Image (cartoon, rainbow, N blue to C red; front, side, top):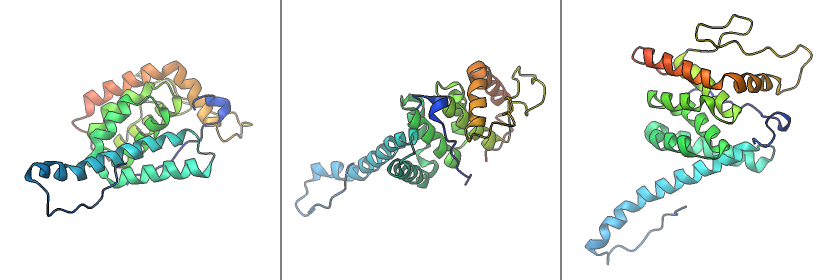
Length: 211
């Protein structure tokens, strides 16, 4: 399982960026017509639990409190335990969620459990309106494919037209210094980054082993 990590976004940079419980019933008097509903209950329970954990990922927008941090971590762990069996559900939520905390958390889960089915959808997130989500999608793609479309710091612009990300100033010791460099870079090159990954994946997906 790939190691999870979370970049801490400062307020100065990102500003505003910020069940169904199962109960036992007496079955001796169950009618045949009721059997379908009874058989369906565990599936409904599972869907409700997944939906609850996905919603709890919203706490990832602010982990300055112990309560939010625990809620987020518990939701991540619960979803990871379900493995790739729920990948389609995770992808669906990733594509339609309006909450960037949820999107960020889903990418965390997919980094640990995702298969090649996730790659196109992670590429879709590379020009996310929230730079932190895009950053997490990019690092997840790098980890899954052992490939990087962004040239190393200090090198020339790549053949894909993307320049390297700026290097933090030597005197800038703030914890969010590298994130601020990413935000500046992403504002200018988000669409080009997505296009570069799309082109590369289209040409190489049949030869790539997803980690």
